[in-house]
Length: 257
Ligand SMILES: [Zn+2]
Image (cartoon, rainbow, N blue to C red; front, side, top):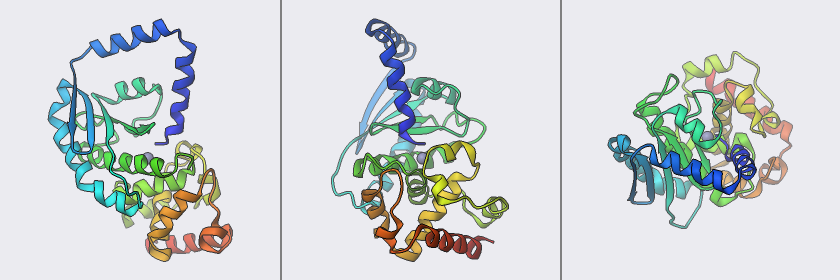
């Protein structure tokens, strides 16, 4: 999920007096036994009940850490905070979006990963899919480190879906996806697409996959570095947006239909 959603939290907090904030923070902190564990490149904050899942989350992140930094050409080592929530409702409440759908189990805010415990994956996920989702969220962290102003949703989600390989783009699923109308890439620049098109994550991943196959991995890093709210196709690929759209649609039909 996109971190700019979290801006709303900032606004909410500003509306509260400092004293109320302190009471709220204190009450949520004291309700369960909190733990912090620093392991490798990550610092985990979690409730005692989730201690058993930290090893799996940590392994998934460390196993993919170098590969993701190399793929995105990010040269500096750094540590990332990870907040693990005991269930989806607590995760949604704590990040300030109590009405988010059940498929939303993780996000990034200011370089920190917030994720639901794989122990309690809810109706749309399972233990393994949440373990894979944390790799997806870490790709978001590195993307934001490269360019915090990069807000193109299909690129932000597509890079994460592609590098974490946690979005189902098997032929079987893509047959279903392609039964609908293929969206305009332009319409996937903003976060709205995530809530208006059920297959936005699949489409986003296939755009990035298409770019890597046809134009090479180097273009991904270049796109992140050079984009803000839209992509300059002429500058990066020396073709118009219409031509790029046409190439991608052909790739989809040839590869998946
Ligand atoms: Zn995401």
